[in-house]
Length: 469
View 1: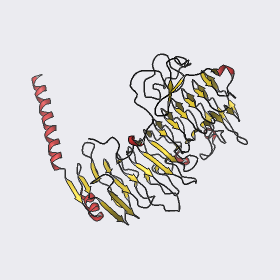
View 2: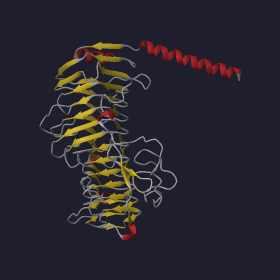
View 3: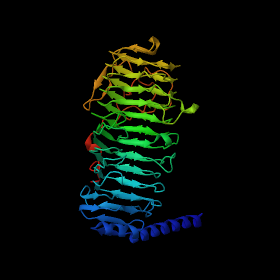
View 4: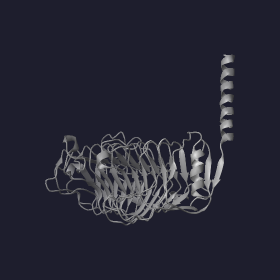
């Protein structure tokens, strides 16, 4: 036993010693030209930091990054001062295979759109605390940033003022039908995308041709303001098994469109004065969201094809087995609808349960709507329309406005403990609080414990947010 303990201690000391040696070998490399930056990248070692002097740099060729850091010793390529290194011109940063564990931090990218990217085979890279305001190209689909490798992170950036075709952030993948896996998109600010044309979303996750592949993308704690772009102006979802949660979709923004793909979750989001949410496809779970002042709130697409039966991937896939539960919808022109479509296939087996609708327009279904489930909903100053009598009760939910414009349950609300049915995936409410025991109808579970999710502001996102002190 004593030998075993001594052996473990010796191994621990050895590992600490090796780690110390590696730390001592890491360097900080200061550069003040783009050729010097490329030269430093070509020679960099795990743990090295390359610091670019503040200033404006105009480049005509891409900075190629294909070096390899490690999980414990990433390679950091950083502006000396966040926001004070501007990259202009016809070149940008391209991260290429076999790059791994690279962090790109603190730049202002004003070069032409359609350049900066993480290519297939480049993994575990972080694009953080940058500002993207790329110059319009005015021809073709040109995104500010494209991610095609696996396990990459896009965090605390600002994407703003896009006036040409393309996405602010595009998640794609290798080949023509595969998705980048496990992209983590968080605490970014997407602002001012007025261009009105196809292919103009703040975030696009996939393409029609990639839509049957699973991306496992997580989009959380991002703020969208005035991202009009196209009708899918906030998020255009075209792949499977993604999570969209804890975001704020704000004033002047177009919809979150679950346009293609299956089995994704949309929960804990605030839709405040935007268009709302639209879904196609199969087996999505939409819950614990708050909608206020939206034009459409939640739209179930009337399908014009069924992918499972051989329809083209470009179709509006018929929605099947989607569950819309435990949401709160207030003062929206339309709270829930399926619009009409000539020769539309409608939707099947849609669950609409335990939602609160207050001050909304008539619930309308204008197409085939086979085997729906309507139950446990509370309506107030809302015309039930398509909801059968057994699917709702009329009652004042006693909602109380909070300082950020959201609404929560008052202590005397009839929604408390009134949830019907079992939905095991609904484990949290709009505040990030756990749902336990009897569930409350709507997005809010009445509780006195601390709130971890709220309406985001510009102080919560972008390069200056949550910086170490």
